[in-house]
Amino acid sequence: MRMTWEALTRAVGGARSGTEAGPRLVIDGVSTDNRNLLPGQVFFCIRGENFDGHDFAASAVERGAAAVVADRDLALPAPVLRVDDTIRALGRLAHAWRKQTRARVIGVTGTAGKTTVKEVLAAVLGQRGRTAKNERNLNNRIGLPVSMLAADGNEAFWVMEVGISHAQDMDELGPILEPDLALILNAGSGHTAGLGRSVARHKARLLSWLAPGGTGLVCADYPELVREARAVRPAPAYLEFFTASGKPLAYSGGYLGAAEREGYGRYRVCRDTICRDLDAPFRGNYGSENVMAVSAAAFEFDLGMDEIAAGLGAAVLPGQRFACSRCGDWLLVDDSYNANPLSCACMLESAAGLAADMARTVQAEVPLVCVLGEMLELGDLAEEEHEKLGRHIAACGPRLVIWKGGQAAAVRYGLHVAGCAGAFVALEQAGDLPGILEEQGVRGGVILFKGSRGNRLEECVAKFKTLAETSDAV
Image 1 (cartoon, rainbow, N blue to C red):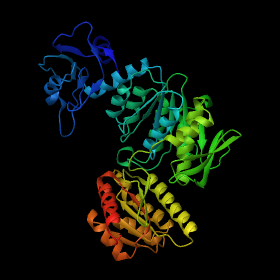
Image 2 (tube, one colour):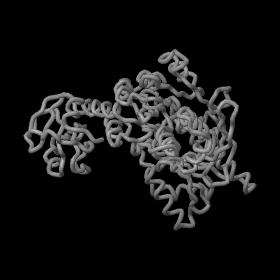
Image 3 (cartoon, rainbow, N blue to C red):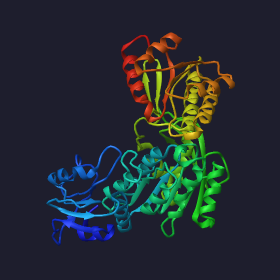
Image 4 (cartoon, rainbow, N blue to C red):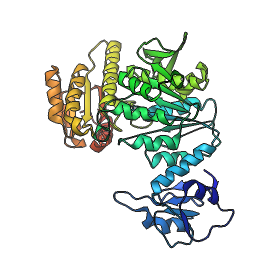
């Protein structure tokens, strides 16, 4: 973002105080963290649970902040704009910047895989022109505006992930982004502590905030999501659908099997009657959903199959998302960044598919080990969803399930009623993992790590990698 102070104050509103700004003061971006602030940026004083940005405003000015936005008067040697709510003011500024951009703006939401799809879609659209995107998963009421304001406004595309965890979130974020294309990847149980059972309805709300002439692009494989999308946008001209399950739609496709390139799968992508087989950095059926979401969005902007193929081949998945690597006799699948019921089901299916592929190659059994952690933020649905998870795990036929965190009894019950023959062991700390594997007599195969952030399974991944490389016991 590059904007005059006059234009910024008109966009945000509020009352000026502090040092009078010169008539030609230009703001070069925003910051909500004084430690990362660059000279010439405006510092937004954000209040959090454990901090108050107003306490760091003076430090921000010392570091070169051109101005400050606050919700109370501050005596500073810099221009200050006092507003009622700094987070809402940040959103108003982001929307004003969005209205100035030449870019086609894409909003990506869903319960599982939206960060991955955002990254891959940005790589594909990047074949056509400069593309801005959220860094990491900065997708909430602070992260989304900051990501938008980090763009210079001259890009061809913006690909912005929209994450929600409370019922009102989409109706706050949607009008800030005002997307030309709203891509809804899927909908399932996730953040149900704040969203309740109507996750699809809350995801579909993004369609309410399309830019004039904008289009919604929705996965047709989730009946409730389709119903909610049509309820928001009943006119067919506003909605397009894609499928990864063989439905007769304009955008369709499916998984064909492992590709020659390690870690990649082969996927068929069809636009009407024109089909092509492409390699993508996924394995299994869950990847079909991602590939078709990305391809359908690219088709909406008139990209061709060659551009899509090149973008898929160049895409780099974000860390801790289906990161496959060899560790001795193990194939490690690190999807430890976060977890919900839908994403867990997808990863379990993919890991089981990898084990089956390896078994066919070596013509011998390849054990599947699942190192899983509690799925958080499910509210009243937590026990029910963890029991369902146990059933999903059982269907994959694991040799061993290692569980970290709460809801172990519900998972164990789901495993039991589904007739799982594999062992179940609780994990207290990362350092116990090698000993458990040794005790259970499992010294190779496919090992999947998946759990919510609060379980810190990345520590288990790091410990496993270290010991797998240095010890004969793993």
